[in-house]
Length: 493
Image (cartoon, rainbow, N blue to C red; front, side, top):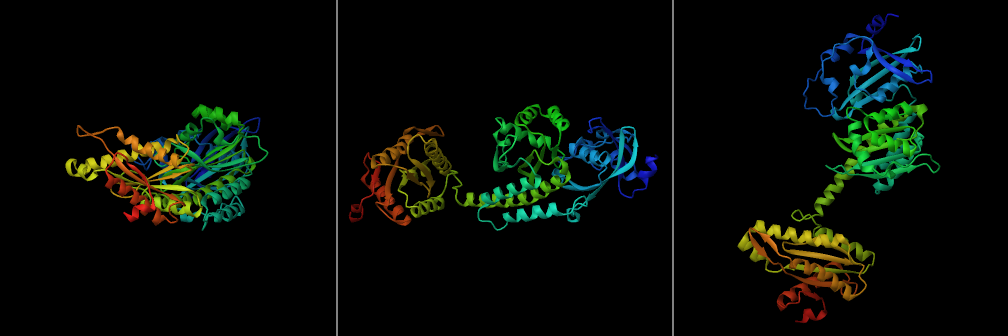
């Protein structure tokens, strides 16, 4: 067959691909047999010349290559399991394929058609492969499926809209997506901002399954950190059989062993991206490999819904964090303190509000400057936060900066007045260690006043007022005792 004449009859960039059919029904070498001028042009004259500032652009798209017919495909295109699967299904399985591929890092969509050619040469099968860059507004439902996949995904992802409980809704969505994929597990893993720390946001697991949940891997953090490299220049990663698993062995041996140990036979992995920021990943394991393209499109569509919603959710959380955080010390502020007190009052939970004022702090600002004063406040907050986070005692403590040199401590789960006093003394005593700034040693003291709910007051304002009254009384007394419990007699003095 004259493949050059055939491929030149196509208007869009097109090549003819040969796929070696193996005796077991799998595939071997995949080659580019011929290409029309529109397909060959970007190979021999790439639009991007290395080095480029575009992250995620495969090196092969930046390198000029002389097109040689019947060459192995990865001489001119990135080596990719997803691409190989399209060629295999079209050439060997004789399936017409229409799908879309998105290069996330550079935000380029490709509209792809692959058609089987009714011609074979021994064990070599052929298909055409047409690829056209397109705008995301042109993307429609693939002609290789009846649209039910897209409809199912949209229906389930609607649950994320106008929800008051994001975490509950995302768990319902991932459960539905697992059913659509007919997978044993489906998991959403999120990535902390600007770090390599990952955590499972939601996971759906079939009751009777043969595979281990991916979040239970001993080296979970290391594995998830490697996914960005595995997906470099790709829209997704598809593992459908033993041959693909062996491919993982060649690029990430540690993950390969985890896959085998976990009983994973197939896996599909998509990045969750929003504005070129990787928010995490969605992963389906042991899915229905008879419907790979349908499942790929389902997960691809799902990532757009989840990425958008996750980005919005994080934005709201960021705004909430900023509005509830003291910008100097990084600990919660007065608003956060007031909200926690209101929550505890509604729950009728016993707790203690401690008002704290740093003694003679004005003198530090006046003699050493505001920069040193800010450093003192930051170090105090750091020391107190360390005590609260250590959970060395039976109480649960929360630290807040509520004014210039004023702090508040909320103490929960105390069982006696003695335990309250013992807890406050921990915060007092840690200030005894000197602080050194500009070669000068500072010894900081503070005054502590506290009031109990519900014994001393029933409202947030009253608790603050009573704790402040006790703290101010400590300052007036000027004694060696720096801690005072509020009593009604304070208002009669």
